[in-house]
Image 1 (cartoon, one colour):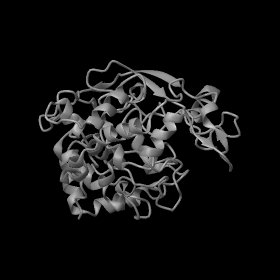
Image 2: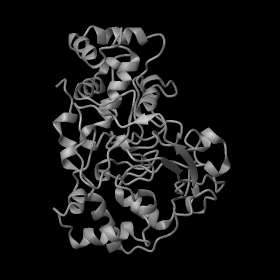
Image 3: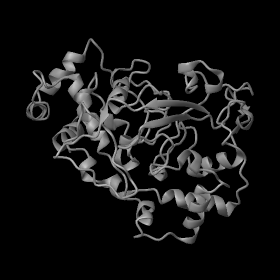
Image 4: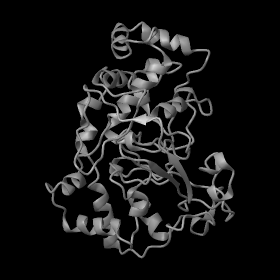
Length: 367
């Protein structure tokens, strides 16, 4: 496990009379950067940009190309394809409740806001995702300026900007839309509110999940079912990254090249294979799983943790992940019966929020 501590400074809860957070009692308000307050107009603009293919270098893809609402804003693929056809190194993460994330991407403690994170898909060149660069940036902005609706919306949302249609304002608007993607109406949420009852199997799964036998709660025990959470009252957050024994190349402790987690930034051996634990909200629809999408089903994921790591018998990734010397101490063999595995799966499915997956406020406005 790798751990960083991050002081939360330069933030303020946005006091915008146009925007309120409609949250259940067990979910605290998120923090919002003080230079990008929320408003309905800004979220609406960001929603249009999120679904607009004109924002990519060659006009072939939008943010939504890799983040589908029906899949909780994942894409159902192990690795995503960028605008030029190159594959990403890692699995597309869901965007539900990203307003509460302490860091973004799978293993980068420096990306602490959605605004910072947005630079990666827009400008990255290894691999190319949206494909914006210095050579085509102005052309892309001119595409947006040619849309009469954008001229009106950008002026309304950024009235103090001399040139309101800019990359900076595009990023702020999309980040605001992403913060609006709140998922808090699952059966689990209603269970906590006392308006929903669990089946016997789901209740047994809940006890396993939050108990010391399965120990899932150590990495997924927050209201957002991850362990990197920041909200309105947070003063200090621990940034945890975990090696969960997916790989152990030739029993050397290594992970596949270009997908080695926090180690890629720190070069510290103990950070090899350390990744951020993702939120499990809507996990039923966000497969395939793990940072590289190498596990197809939730059943496979539960089996992996029950065994305490993955064994790959042959091929370039051969090795016994259970014996990885950098594996988190939280990952060890769990003696689960077949019934207990089913109970855990049934509980995980209570985290699905059907209203979030179909909410028109998050859908493609260009249809």
